[in-house]
Length: 426
Image 1: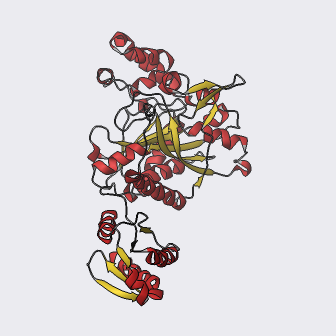
Image 2: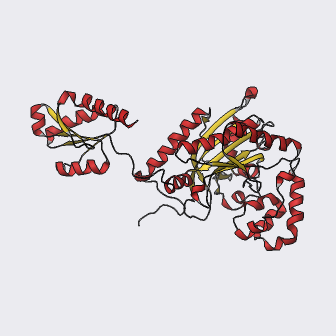
Image 3: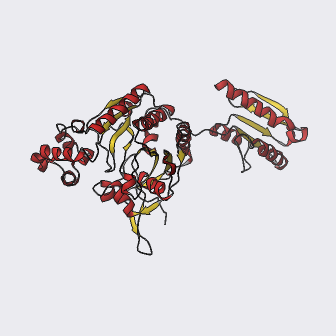
């Protein structure tokens, strides 16, 4: 029997994994510049954590979670998102002691039972930031700035934030009633999911993907018309910070996020070059979640993004094309004595640069072809004649130039040439 990866999952093969490595490398470097530290969360948590944290009216909790019962009858769920687990850890380990702002990031797989389609999998990867412990609107602006900065660092110039407010428990009840009043007369025209949302949380109707439902919502009232004074001032301050930071943004009063825990600021970052599916990330403020999950009242703000979606965006816009980077050096050898001499050179070179070699005793022509296919910058050729004369041939694969070098000087010569090549590329 030939086994296959389960439906909704996929193998990331070496010809693509270099893209993931680049995104993770740039993400971690950006997180470091902004002062965030890594947290690594369990793959599964108590089911109740997500039901309370995400909201039992959301599609994630109602339809998409991978939930199972362990051998002692406990209900556990593979994490469908990172915020609830991060908040649980924040509370459990008393990270907020001393009333300090805790700034965390993660880069890990999530799990949702969704219909598999292009760029959407049942096991998918996310990066995320969480800043826990401050009500300051500047924190919201910092996270939005981080998101735009990250995408620009990856080569997606022109990314733009779309910002809105989700209100707070003071102003959202009146807004929910206003929505029910305005939409109730045409409720029978909405999909079944929206009818459920209408009763449980009508703001979630804006998350519907049904085009007909979205058309029905076009003339729905904006929450910005119902904000309390505190939420209105907070939202105004976020916008002022973004303006002073020169972050591109627009106000999108129709935007809603698909999780119940958001309060005040919500946002997404889009790139016009991606067409209709232009969203790259989304997030917002969740000031009640820490308390909801058993901690002291603690304001917080966060963002997350799907890595698969980001790879598609980088590929579609031509930013991330080509093949994985090749080895710096390929060492080709002919004969048993030459293989031993090559082993010494390889071991020394691998202390500082990437090296590949042949382990199948192929001809020199085959080895040179392989070096070219891999994209090696240089090839070191060692045969029985070179061993006898105490030399090696070093070939620059870009210029085609090759020279004989004393065996004990091969490593030094290559390192000097690689350094010169690197500096000329800058």
